[in-house]
Length: 288
Image (cartoon, rainbow, N blue to C red; front, side, top):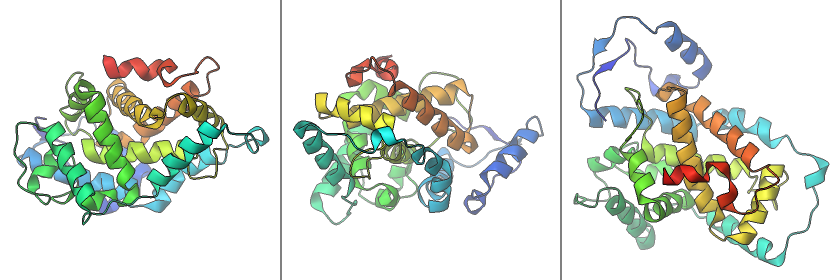
């Protein structure tokens, strides 16, 4: 990512709770005098990742404002329905994964994080679990473990699955290849954590069983494919990036991009002719 210019004001992370006001301000400021951005790309990635983590994962009120209105759209149709034994078993396993927090003292969690680095940068030696190098992947700071507080170990599992199963797609988004990119792009790793969180909320997976149409239909897909959630994560990440490019968005508009992505996924998961995860219209994005 090559950074050349920025707009005149760089909002502090503490101000991001006023997202709507800031977006209006930035849009009114388009065309104003720009200043040369002289800091290194690593510094900017650190700043953006910190802002993303504060606004997306760290603020419960912000998350509630974005997602709760969707979770309230439940109908009596989905309050009581039977699960097949296979659906119930796989849903339970998925929910158990969701309950595991990231623990930087666990050797298996450390190994998973190191494995993610090797997938992302196979030819670059990692200096340690705490290193400034992590910022190049879009983590908040030198210690990625601090960014998992919003979603836990499953978000790391999602990133690992993405990198191992669809490496071309993974690296295209990591290195922001293709398309007319913004000067300030979204931090890859922190955005990935928020995609995991968005899917869990959208599918109502924290309930005993989903009580909305997308979640109800997702269980059918899960019954057909045990990896349905992980594949859906990859689709969602690609769809988010496609929406980002289509909207010509910059990092201040990530909130809006993620909501548009969620809405599109809800529509696709409500289609009657979707019987497998590969039937989703957006599935082909991971092979483009």
